[in-house]
Length: 198
Image (cartoon, rainbow, N blue to C red; front, side, top):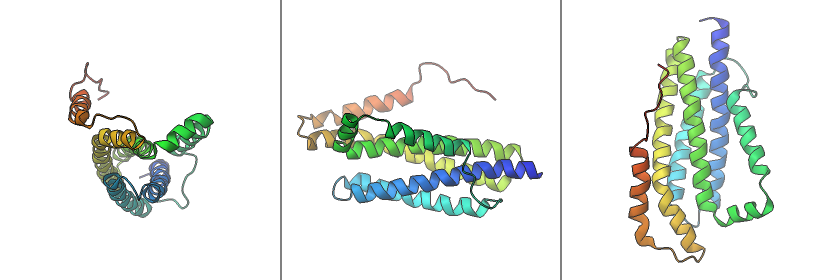
């Protein structure tokens, strides 16, 4: 494998390492913040964080070039997301504080989707450049994130309804199965075929 190919793969590996470290830190803070409530969500966040910590160790082992690359595409995406969050108005920030569990769930889902896309890109790069080890690792981590996103999405309706109820709103809890079924059906049927580039 040429030096340029090694550097290209390593840039993606370093990007994913930076993202995974960011996710692990955020999940740790959420576990602490939500520890008194939402036991199901905290248990899932804890499980996700364990997976992320395993990913970090694996990525560190396959990184070929010294220090992490901090200017890559995924690192830039993290910075942009942080800038967007910092730009939200004071009123919106207060609303988000009142809905900590749904916000945590939404943020975790967003990070998991970003990680899934990043691992897809790492997989494509490593396979195209003949790095079987990194390709295997990227595919394994991608599978983990697909499971994580599915689990978080399934948890979402009950977390939202619980939060609304805790806020004193007259939530009809009996609608939870109907909501879950409707949201699931959206994923089941796609209105048009997804274009394929291969």
